[in-house]
Length: 185
Image (tube, rainbow, N blue to C red; front, side, top):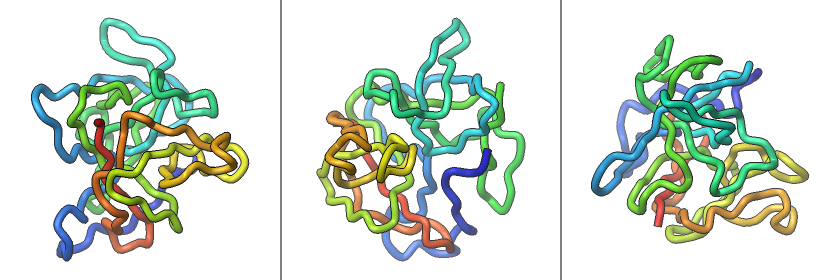
């Protein structure tokens, strides 16, 4: 399946503090790190920063699939960017997590204090402290992308009531693709 999010090469310099974080980058957390192990149990490749659904668990970790319109705050999370399960790094950017590969995963129900970089839809203007909305891929929304406002009267997006924007939008690479930092409150 095609990539959900496309980013260019990393910028050589960071002009604004915090603007060099790619999607899925663990930004900050207080206390014990609560990232969990997960396995991609579908035929789709998955990307760091992508919201995914929990479809089960074993003694080795969660089983996850690409998010669908049925994702909820209790059954979803975000893929973290790390080297667990990655098979290639090209131009400094991790490639997708292939089916069956292990990855680190941050449940939406993680303890307060977690922050992570996520992809933001172009044209959205997140306000620090604003509610985070996840696109459900229905109507006017892009599946797995982050919005600063409800789409389609709220039916096209999922409001993450326990997550807020911790930064404004920024462009971490040479492309026009946007990111923002969200935090668990």
